[in-house]
Image 1 (cartoon, rainbow over the protein chains, first blue to last red):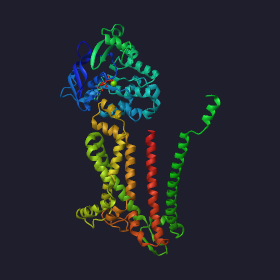
Image 2: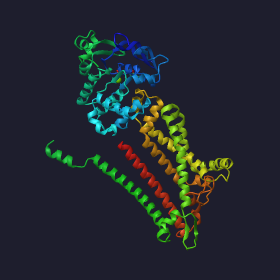
Image 3: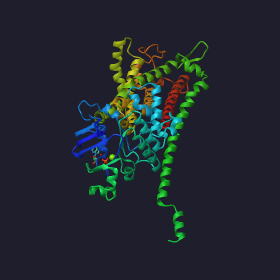
Image 4: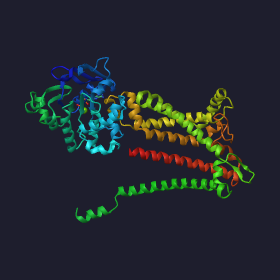
Length: 254
Length: 308
Ligand SMILES: Nc1ncnc2c1ncn2[C@@H]1O[C@H](COP(=O)(O)OP(=O)(O)O)[C@@H](O)[C@H]1O
Ligand SMILES: [Mg+2]
């Protein structure tokens, strides 16, 4: 890792869906042990940025990516890069909580089992640790073998966090992880994130300005596929340099 | 409007509610007719089929376990020889074997159509399957008779007629149905499970068999049981290739028979009310009860699936 603590560096990134240019030359970096918030109106390319970092966009036909993304100094789009390996290092959380329709235990151990881990002691340990880190251990420890779909939305999302943590990624990408949840669940997840920051780097896409200002260290503002402004969260919210940023955070458009 | 007018207008039946009443009456009538038809079929088959046991005093156990089917003769003790075991075994053998062979093919085809190449699946395989579902069973039987039976004869010896040929014809017959139901089951697995799995670093294959197939297990079992209930009730095609010998089958390539084949063969040759006729109705009753059991199994699986 470089000395400036950059875990992910993005250089002149362009992403096209067919003819549509969804990201227009983005250059930025994400630091270790930080929460970076990505904000901007709907359709400005926030999800595209995340899915390009973990190459989930590979699944979409007609996607073209130019520029470079490096995760921990590995070039994500290098020809010899294995997208499956990459995704083990770059966890992702989605807007809709999406636990598998299996037991809580099977959900959390999924990532380890697909990597070939069979040792029950190792799996048991990972389940307890991950669920604790996701701040849901106490709520589910007595029903690890119940179906995860029986939990509330907020609990499901924390199971998803635990499922990601169990694979020990370097980065966790979160795409509007609380927008489908009630305020109390959101608050629990935010507090979980602040704890996770000590061990992980987190990139969170959010449309909730308060959320961005509460939890993030740095904030990036996107508009129509371009990175308009990127800096310390405090600066972005207190003294934005660009007029578009100011308009957006003060709710004048978007 | 004063209060009285409002009251009056609320108490009066509106046009919409009259229409609703009319619709309810129509659909109620239709349901009543359907129920009446089903109940009378059941009653008819049951009264005839049970006559074998109550009127002709055949022992139910002997009926189910006896191995000689020759209703017009009696055995040493003077009991009529109506042992249905050879056909029961024949029916279950072709049904289960066809399902066992069809299941992996159906799953393979469905995975290809939904996960690997949905475009080819939709454009080529879907129409082919719909076509196959629509082919009348006599055509399958005819192909079985002219292709499968000679093939079995050359490869395994014997006459070529028997459970193996029956299995093969039924396998081809139920494959399209089981496949298309399996496709539905796989398609009903939400997209975001697949995304979640891939994002966790699973390969496409791991995603297919550890998430998609696992999440649709109850749907797949339902598809297979549905196929089995079709196979169990199929008459014509099976009758053309199974050999129609009412013997306890000792291997897969000797002539055998099924409940349906005995029924279609014997139907025209017995007099209403006679024991041999009643005995055929008893077979029909069995054929009526089995799909009922298959249906109960499907519902039970569906309920368990919903609980998960
Ligand atoms: N799979 C796709 N195919 C085609 N266009 C897409 C696809 N995904 C996103 N887009 C387009 O790319 C642009 C950015 O989308 P997205 O990254 O989802 O924005 P955001 O997450 O900021 O709302 C939008 O104009 C959207 O319509
Ligand atoms: Mg989005």
